[in-house]
Image (tube, rainbow, N blue to C red):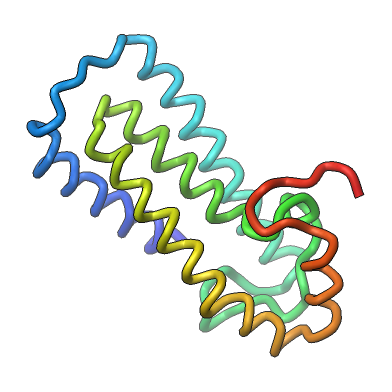
Length: 150
């Protein structure tokens, strides 16, 4: 998880350094505080997901040490991909903290990449590993938009 987040933060900083001069937009100073709030929410959500994988799933988010038990508790009770949502909020907040339009725009392909990764790799792998339990979960819980009523 930390390597994944670190890689995206590193890429975001490269984008910020290379392309920020092309976006002449002045953010109000209050945007930095909003950025810290959004970043903190995203980071907390991501850490909660990791904790759910470790405690409930008896594994980690890493494919080489994937959870042994299916995790549908914690944030996963409301949405199927809260870790990616947390990552996006952290990235978006990071962009606001640095007042970087380049990082905010960089977040758009990140969303597309996450969606394609989930659809092409993760969901088929979870169907194979957890079978009917995962199918029932998919019918009950949305992929990206949290559902707070069951």
